Image (cartoon, rainbow, N blue to C red; front, side):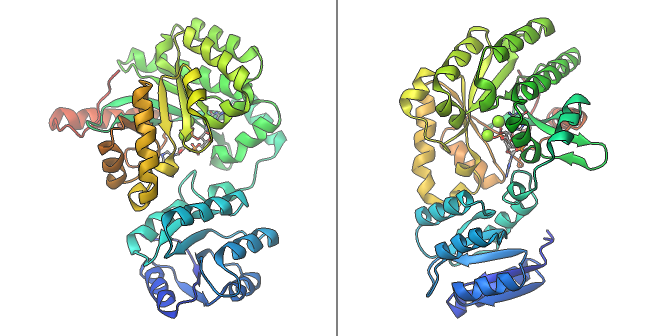
Length: 407
Ligand code: C2E
Ligand code: MG
Ligand code: MG
């Protein structure tokens, strides 16, 4: 795989490790490597010219890696960062989180000595939607987003949700995309914050739901009856409007409610406990599915979880992607899966990118997964072709690993 990264700045006090890192980068096709032996020198070099990537060691004389990141944030030196350290993973993860809280595009962390494959896996995030680079994209302008809503340019992409042991298709998550007439497809990180800040969150939910219901009917006519998941913004949890409108649309569409699942994030619940409980109860009373999204990133307590009538728990991708390289997360993952089992919730691991991720979460008892390993989010026609191909493959070679349509 060819990476399009022009240059890298390797910040590392050990000459040996520096040389090793440069060799790995050269091997991955990064044309130019610059080196800094301490934090102060690194900042000087970044001020002179921003590199496309920084490999940043944590323990260094003068300024350490933490101080370098704090200074980068203060000076607006926004460069994708890979944190490297010989220390334990818990410390590396803490520093990664700190960098993201400071608004820096941290791709991830690696334990030294560095390995080419692990570095490559992180660098792929530079181009992946939802990856570290994504958050650094500029937000869209409010007037343009208003126009997009009015002109129905916001459409759902569909990402399959499959069983981990047999690859059976169990549903699809609808993820909003802006099909811009000139700029092409724009990811949600660039327009959803604008929608939420402008008070249009409920409008977005209903716009996605309506398209999903129409799509469901179309696929059902062709024999594919598939549960569809809709993301609910934290900001649409306020007030009665949303739930009444949702119920109305589902009644009108005649789609059986059990085929629609609403995803609410852990943070949204913690922020609006009373309203969220009311909405959750009404959604479930109406026979709809209810999923807790991005679980493991917030601070939802066991008690809070127990009060909600969830049917599904989605484990956040930070606990899934490359988890085999982060041994300290294993206990967290195990306890989440166990918790879900006790509460009789189905579990979905988000962000399965490799066979290793799949094996790791599968062996720990997680039932379903979503991720680039199976398929990226796709427009409805591409999704349909994907399903057909899988079914075809299954017919000609009935291996257990080939997904099939299944409700
Ligand atoms: P989410 O609901 O947690 O959705 C999962 C995100 O992870 C999606 O990003 C998906 O493309 C990405 N993803 C899936 N598999 C992988 C993988 O293997 N590796 C990696 N690195 N990423 C993977 P996307 O589509 O950019 O959406 C980002 C977030 O935007 C969503 O996170 C959700 O919170 C929000 N969002 C998307 N559509 C809607 C919507 O219609 N309404 C609301 N309220 N929020 C939405
Ligand atoms: Mg979701
Ligand atoms: Mg999620």
